[in-house]
Image (cartoon, rainbow, N blue to C red; front, side, top):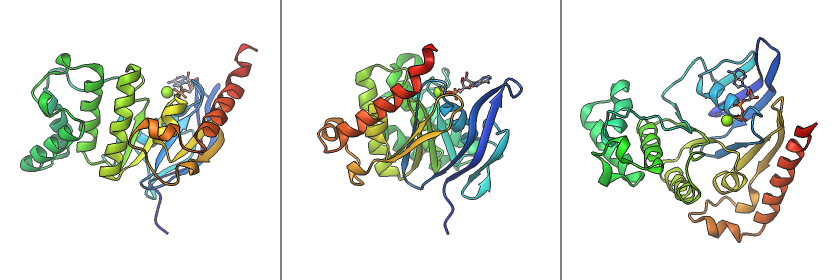
Length: 261
Ligand SMILES: Nc1ncnc2c1ncn2[C@@H]1O[C@H](COP(=O)(O)OP(=O)(O)O)[C@@H](O)[C@H]1O
Ligand SMILES: [Mg+2]
């Protein structure tokens, strides 16, 4: 049987010397070429699980595998894009995109071609020679996405990548991500707290309970009938969309209702 990109088996993660359980016995398979979204209230462990998958942290118990191999640290096959802009301020757009590939030891001629390909994919060709300080927030995040993609990860890990952007830029970025997923054939794990974003981008939504993080629901976006929509408004009119949105709002309310207790 082919191995899944990510297998999470009974993973628990605590902080504060075990006093605080962030994730409790999580078990989950991430499927190839699918977009899986982690959603849930703030503090439910979404980022924790993504960082474990990235190899940036280790579980207290349980195992994490990537294509059947234990995850022992970060690897080029798992590329991560963070919420905060993470490119180098002293490098131009094109140099930022090339940087990760240089570290990987990819041949110079290939680096150039690949950098131009991904620059085009994130619609930044005109800004190849601009420095980050000359770019808007959305553009900077596009540089970060292009740089990560240029390293050719099989799995793309996105932690609230549009969380710091305004609504219209977020919307453009979401549509760009659809374009990229369709053309580059990636397995994507997306952390978000935005219900509409999760429904728009994901093929499957994993809903986390709040403290300790467990799986509350594992929902296939069947109403999309295997299609990804280029434009957000095309999805909004689809049969089943409103029901899915309502379901997720209700789950979110259930999880946050005892916050005041
Ligand atoms: N390094 C840490 N030390 C202590 N607590 C942490 C640490 N990292 C995360 N936590 C706690 O673990 C819980 C889950 O965090 P996180 O995964 O960032 O949640 P989410 O991304 O779903 O908002 C939160 O309550 C957070 O405060
Ligand atoms: Mg988070």
